Length: 280
Image (cartoon, rainbow, N blue to C red; front, top):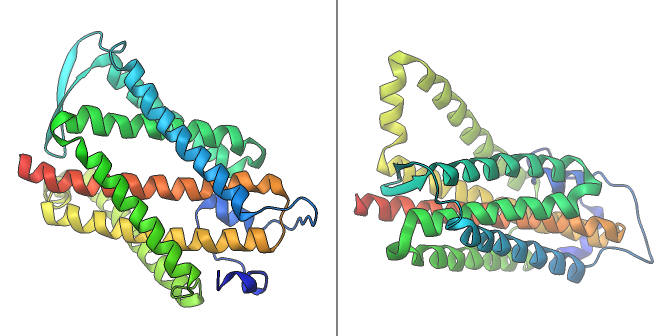
């Protein structure tokens, strides 16, 4: 890659320049000349995390019939009516809670990343399968494949732009990323507070449920995720060129897998918003 040779000389990323796993890698001072991280090693482990995510999808399909017990209720998810059994809802809720737990453990307990990262991917695969098979159903399941193709295109495009030096992780890049993230976090916080106030609740609800607002916010989130992907590539370059010990390949791979999964879910969310509007 054109930018890799200078990876050692670059300054460390700022607070919002990468996801938490990648930020922690920027602070590692260890080096190994005999057993260092490699691009192929990180790529292999990233592919493994992706396969484990697929395993989470398979787990959902295996448990789907078993969990169809108890009373049923119907929810409307982005314009798609979804009939769920109580046990299915409980299982989904547990998986989402575990996703947060495993994510935090993978972020902050470095030694646990190979295991907690894999468990996180399983929970995300389970959630993705719920969206594709339970929410979209047979009629719109193709959106899951379409989201995958778009995600692969985004990853390939960002990798090309980074490798050719067209997009570099400079101070300006970090400032743009910080501004986007700070704005979205600020808007989300203000919206949440306003929703809790009875006087403004209906007004906020109308804005949040607005079709155009949903589309725009989804696109912005995808742009942010794509920029994080560029930052992840830059951190991986630092890890390899800085000759960090091979054990850090797991954290680099999980950081990249985390961003890719995030992009996929946001792309799928965008497609569901568009088709759900037409469906309703």
